Length: 390
Image 1 (cartoon, rainbow, N blue to C red):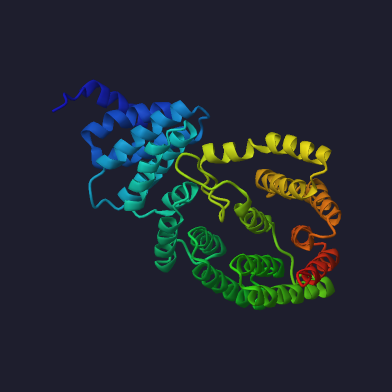
Image 2 (spheres, one colour):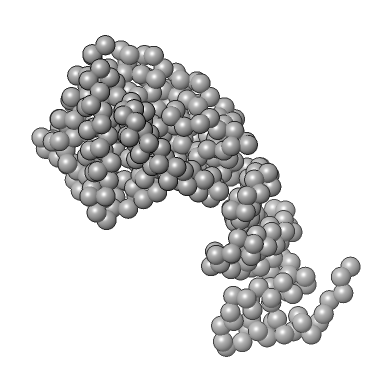
């Protein structure tokens, strides 16, 4: 049994009971001492103080040490304590973030697995998706959604559908996405969700059905999306909405997953289908390919290889959207050149209507995000007509 330093315990109590407010570092030192003599009272306080310190730091090595200590302290909280599971998950979350930031992926995954056992499986689902283990990720998504953790929403339904699709379960993925769209239709009718979001969801479902080879379903869904766009172009949104760019970014990025290398444990990719919970190392690696793609685009342009150029330019646009597409300041001015260029390049391919339809659809959905509804309708109407050209 560890010998108790009674003088240190007294100093810690005096510090915490004094009239001045101790610094965070002083609190941590005090709670470390007092947790040895009164673990029930002070271990939760120690966890909170360590996590507060880690949130204010920018050094991954320091964050790692603080996170590891917080995890050990949380594990020592007695079983059955009301806050134990919540504090353990918070500590594990901070710990895994530091591990991934340092490239220690296997240890980070193990921390996420422990979080899942404690009741928070969302981060593990993201990690599995990053490594191409889509079926396992989808099983976690389904369990969470059906248990109401988190609440049934766009974000968890899109992630679930994306992982089902990644696993090759196209019909199951479409069923989940239709369930989401049914909810969205009801919310739009009650003016609890924007028509723009319904438009983006319908267009994405049409892409899913087309990719699965269900052309009739895809065409019917495109027609419904065009009807919604006609309403937006005629009357606009029934009410003003706060920033909803995250919906657009998430679905635009997901639409480009098939053009990226396959994910694996050795070469992880972002968990397309969510804009939350990306590992920092995976996100950085993905966005850091921008200069390489821009150089590739310049070479393709010089060589006159237009089909490949159109595809690479779209991959560049998706990365730009992921990097800063959620920021509304001058959103239209910053991103319009990407989509105008995509359409202009695709128009140089008269024998390739599919690429032009895709570029017009991309620009249309971007214009919806800028609330420029008439041009958005016109672009999408042209795209719909192109889908009938063999």
